Image 1: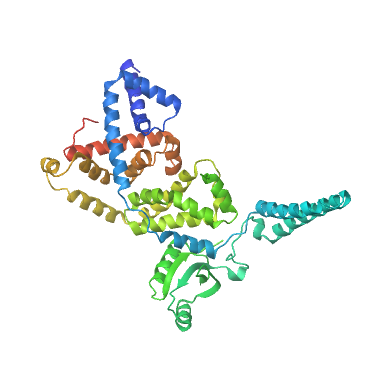
Image 2: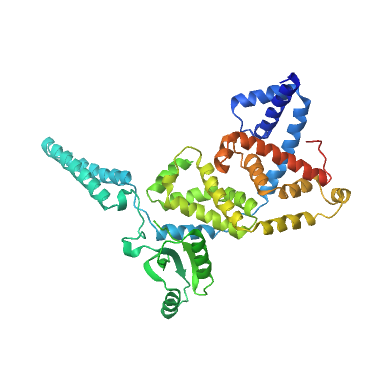
Length: 228
Length: 184
């Protein structure tokens, strides 16, 4: 390769790094290389000016964009409320240990023999509780949701649905019958977990089901449910 | 301020307040990133909601290999592109043609009508989704080469090349609109 093409290649390499140099997100080594090249090449300095102009307009354009509506968080919290999770195994052990530490503090005022017995008993209880908790978790998972299907009978396609406050029991029964759906859990955070299909839905099927439920006048909110 | 990593750890213990804190910290930037891709406020809002619902359901998906904001943007980006792919290509092309057809004036009239900043911003709107994405990530979201690679799911070398071509395309569109900055 000739000296000229080597130089062109090196210039192109520096040119490609300029946007990150302008944004201040280059690593130390690359930053030094760019600064050395900028000191030598007026062409690169002109290019950097153009980049800074583009950067300013890109920031202005993005900052002029809207933000999510204030109610958007409510929808997310409604799902979190409908699908609460157990604290992690580690957290439950810490909490249990803290409770026992508090009891031990009280026991410390008792005799050394009583204290030693209390420590031994606490250790046994904490270990035993951990084993019991893990044995309760489905599939050995450390997390679970209250709306998680509990047996094969509750497998299928699910949605989280909130009914309008004005919806009557008869209207709700009608729509469930019309759509062949059943309420399997809830309300949690105002949402019910509905079984709307016999088998787990594909993303397309879920989107179509959501669109159909959202069209119903007595439906306030319809969201994807955890299928796990 | 409590770190994102700490908030995600609290989320694993089922703390809804941690979810609210993470949402407050990241929702606007993620929304704007998605909105620039899908160009539909309702769809962008749905995607942001899905991202945070996913986070609630599976905070263990965050392995700490990147910043939480980078991880969340990668999830949002996948959802946005999935939506874009669902749209018919013909529809997208129509939209692009309409956007270009709006700019009927010749360059001189354009220059009289708008400031240089207005013109450049309208040129940024005309970039392809692929080019808009990389320009926004670098200039507005201030993501490093490594972070853009993680969000977009491409090698770092491709990130640099794509950014170069995005700038080149922007220069061409700007030149056609009457702003010749002598590059490329």
